[in-house]
Structure formats: structure tokens, C-alpha cells
Length: 320
Ligand code: RIB
Ligand code: CA
Image 1 (cartoon, rainbow, N blue to C red):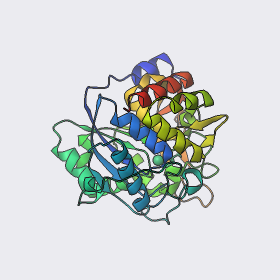
Image 2: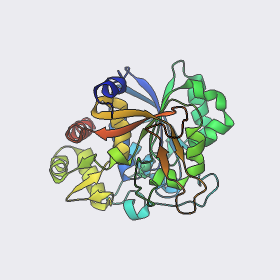
Image 3: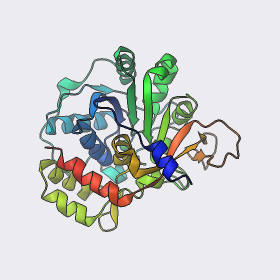
Image 4: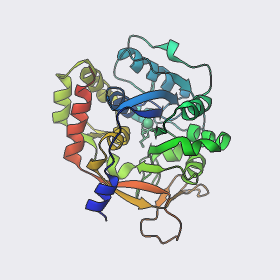
């Protein structure tokens, strides 16, 4: 396991106003990631795109528009795929509630932010019209990103980095060996993994350790209106436990984007099982090169848990 060098190698200077597209399925842990990204002055979020995942694409889109109204933020929102490429949609309403973001009554939604084009078209426009390369952060199933790659393969060179929350070096959180975002659309993940996009994977191995403990919740409750809202969402969130810690899976993807030094990163070949009756959606990170394939990703294998908790509170404190 590389430590210092991987940290140095993982240590990336985040440029001021880094152009970002966030593909998301809010989702309570998505909401935390979105908050952290929206209020960090180092990021210039050009577009949000929504994808069916935690709940239907209509519901996740409504949730995103509620969040943008809550913070009075004007970022375009493009609705994406309402189902996986081939499979029937699954959902995680058992984790996020039937609305996908239970626990807090949001007064309104900013429907005027909706674009007229599909998410894939809007992603393509941002990537090709921007002078600088754009970072894509995928914190839901990879259906939209796979379609982008199939429809517009030329956009790969316009992507600075694709950071995804997904996969696992070992066990799953949806199936025995499959993490939810990958399990939802394994075929999409395969297209992404084979795309040669500069890919960083932030999986369960760090997400399971990126915890909000009771002491952080107590701080949230007294912090600001975002802290109060998130604390209400946490009362409905079943990703972990209120006592031993709530898992900030998607928050890790933004934490990596902004402060990568809190992660230990390894280079690896990654692929995904799409044929297995019992193992579809399982990700295989060939850290030791058994398969003899070319490296196609960087994967976060560990996290400084205390630093994450500090980062989380600082990120929410900025949301004023
Ligand atoms: O496995 C965790 C992932 O699945 C997160 O993105 C969560 O929001 C769900 O989409
Ligand atoms: Ca998500």
C-alpha cells in the first residue's frame, strides 16, 4: 500500500474556480455533497444533471430543485435517464425515504432552473463550449455518463477528471459484493471503466469510514440553517446509524475533489461483473495486477477519518 507517494501523487492542487458538472440522484448523502460543492469558492459548478437511482428521476430532480431553492442558488439542472441502460430500475428508498430526501419540509423548488435539453446533451455542451477542461463528479448510477460516452466519445479529451462515488474493493452495500450506484447500472459502469477517461473511484472502502458521529450532529444543530436542515434529513437517513455514525458516501467524492490529501490513493485496473447471476455489479480492483491489464483508474483505499469529520463541519459551516 503506497502511503506518502500515493498521498503526494494523490495530492492535487485544486485550481481556483475548477469547472465542475455534478451528476446526482439526491438522496440525502447527495445533499451533503451538493452543499459542500456549492459553497466552496474553489469550484465553479456549471451544471447539475439528474439520474434515476435512489428514487425515480422525477423525484431526485424535484429534490435537487428544492435544495437549490433552499440555498437560492442559480445553477442549471438537466434531467437525465429515468432508467438504467438495460436493466429494470432499482431504488434505495429504504435508505433515503419514499421521497428520496425525507426528514425536512422544503418550502419550494426552483423549476425555472430546468434546461430544455436532456442531461447528456447539456453535459456535452458544457464540455465542448468550455475553454478549460471540466471535472465531472458522478454520485449516482453511471447511466448518463455512459450515454455521454456512447453519443459523444470525442468529449473524453474535454474531461479533466471523472470522480465517481461507487464500487468497493470488497463487500457491497446493495448486494453481497455490489455497491448501489454500480449495482443499479453495471453495463453503464463497464462503459465508463473502459472509456479511458481520467477516472478516480471513491468507493465504499472510504465511504464506510466517512462518518458523521453524534458529536458532529450536535454541532450541526446549532450551526446554521443548512446544519439544521441536514440534521433533519439525518433523522430519516438509514445509511449507517445515528449512534455509530452516518455514512457520507457522496460527501467523500467532493472531499476528494477539494482535499484529496485526506485520502490514500492507489492506481489500479478496475472492471465490473455484468454477467453474474449473483455477482452482477461487483467491482474488481486488480491492485496487484493479476489480470495483466492496463491501469484505468485511481482508487481511494483509505481515508483520514478525523480529517473527514473536520472537513465535513467546515464545509457545512460555509453554507450560509
Ligand atoms: O452506495 C452509496 C451510493 O448509492 C450513494 O451515491 C447514495 O446516494 C446512493 O446513490
Ligand atoms: Ca447518490
